[in-house]
Image (tube, rainbow, N blue to C red; front, side, top):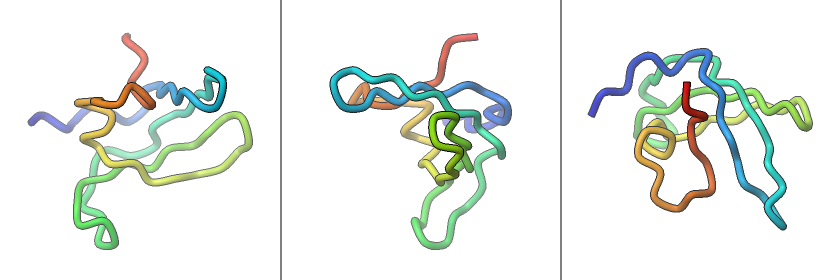
Length: 71
């Protein structure tokens, strides 16, 4: 699976009652020791928070809760 070129990409998160939250990927995927997987750092615009998200959740979304916005 190709995991590069995520830095700077826009992310959509579908929350409660179809509320959409947007975030920006701040890093390329890197090994995250706590999660034991590749993860990216995301800045969320609704509340100015930061989270780590699994790279695979963005590249191969299966639950339609979070995805990359098409370029």
